[in-house]
Image (cartoon, rainbow, N blue to C red; front, side, top):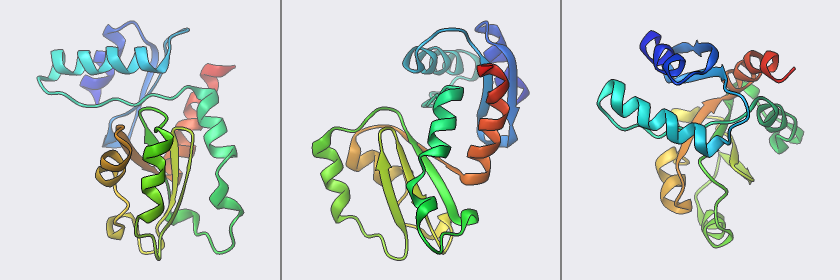
Length: 163
């Protein structure tokens, strides 16, 4: 994570912070689009580490919206310790979203809003069939999943950059 932080700083990002050993990075980058930031980071990772890794970025305000708009929090019997957000690299095409209707869900449930899939897995994320690979294949977009605690922590870390 120290090397990843140094890579971000080499790109000119400010106040770079990493969170746990999962590739989560919070930084200040000025007015740049998420797509532009993702592309810069992907290219830097190849240069600095010698392998390709997809990068999905969200701004501080977007993270706040993701937390506020979680439709699963309104459902009864949702254990927030079993709640996750799958971040998508782009908004899926409406035709691709229709493919999600036939996916096996029980006992899991999910809801796709814009570039996020809110996911509740009562038996744990390790037991669900609703994985990043499945969503990537069905929706033809990149995906990465974080648990609800991590999403909230990253949002808190990013808040100071939006003020």
